[in-house]
Image 1 (cartoon, helix red, strand yellow):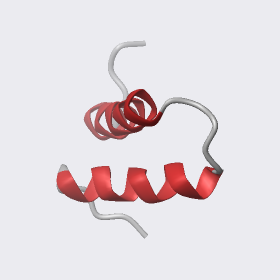
Image 2 (cartoon, helix red, strand yellow):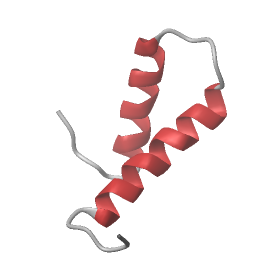
Image 3 (cartoon, one colour):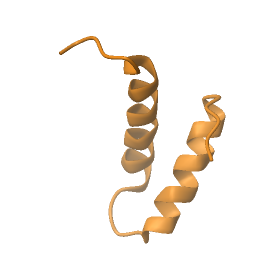
Image 4 (cartoon, one colour):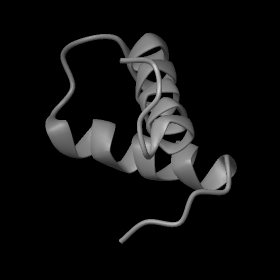
Length: 49
């Protein structure tokens, strides 16, 4: 299934999460990944709550 409703948005979010994971690697508490993902999402212009 290549086409779905939020394909572009989903791709941006997954890409941001992968960049965070690649930069940080393993071993940090979840809150560290959460804060870094928030920074990454803001940098690519995605609003979130």
